[in-house]
Picture 1: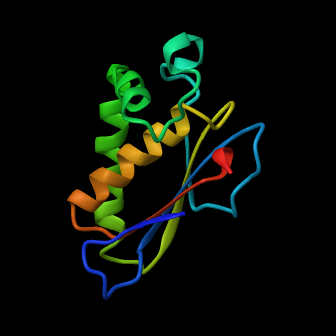
Picture 2: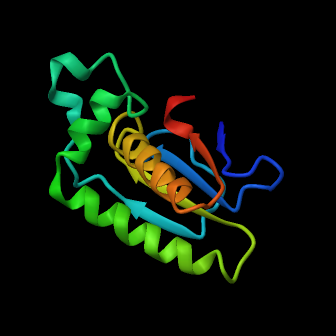
Picture 3: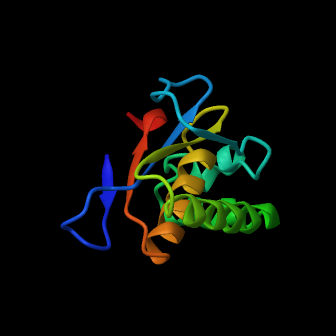
Length: 127
């Protein structure tokens, strides 16, 4: 589990869990984002030994034009929600939980931290 803090004296306000439909399931999440229809690098031989935490896989997934819109929309929603609630969770899922969901979860977490939101990130499909 990775915790990303802007201020190390505060608790994380958002938990982001990536997982696959065929991998261990996270605890119940308030919001679910299904990214299984985005670009999946599984067919790319040079990326097979990597996973969604790797920058090469993230670049491949973010090459799908829909990725940026998802990240932007989630950031806007979360920024608004954190003004009203102390803690909530987001599940990011795909079929396998190795490439697309972790890559999107990492990108969403980075976007939220850049907005000043503290994030805990866990990849259930990679455990």
